Length: 97
Image (cartoon, rainbow, N blue to C red):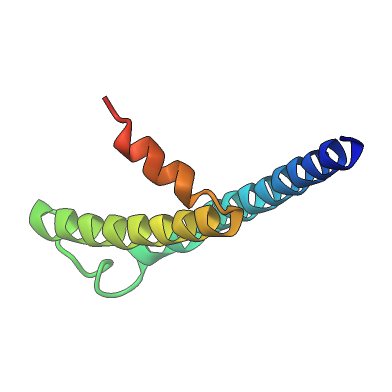
C-alpha cells in the first residue's frame, strides 16, 4: 500500500511540475508576442496604409489576430499532449451542457 501512495504522490508532483513549466513557457511566449505584435504595425505594408480608410486596417488586424490565435491554439494542443490530458479533454467535451 505504501508503494502505491508513493507512486501516486510522485506522479502528482511530476504532473504539477510539468504543468508549471508549460504554464511558464506559455506566459513567456505570450508576453514575447507583444514586441513583434506592436512592431508589425510600423513595417511595410501597414505603415503605408491610408489613415482615412478603415477597411485595410481591419483586414490587417483580422489576419494578425488569426495568426496569433492559431499559434496559441497550437501551443495549447502541445501543452495538453505533453501533460497527457487528452482523455480529460474529450471527456469534458462530451459532458458539456
